Image (cartoon, rainbow, N blue to C red):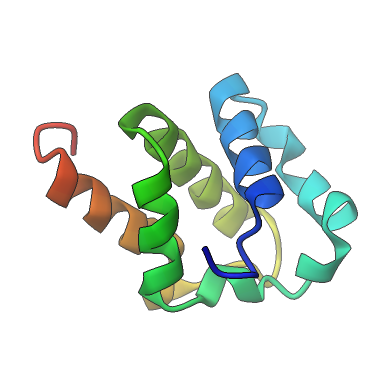
Length: 100
């Protein structure tokens, strides 16, 4: 997994999605101050495909939800055509076409 995508970050994103406490998304700025630029949201597809491979479908779905909320709520975290949501949805649809 890419250095930018630590297990701690991935677990944080999954926990928000599983609990549906999307108001906690802004805590990423204090809990992970080195991510303030939002650059991890614009990584190439490969690191996100590695994340997808490490998660079961239910956790993959919740991380997709969390990242979608983050893109809309935190300034500078929008990523447009290179959104991790795109890469993760693509991985999910390849793996479990009936889910998407």
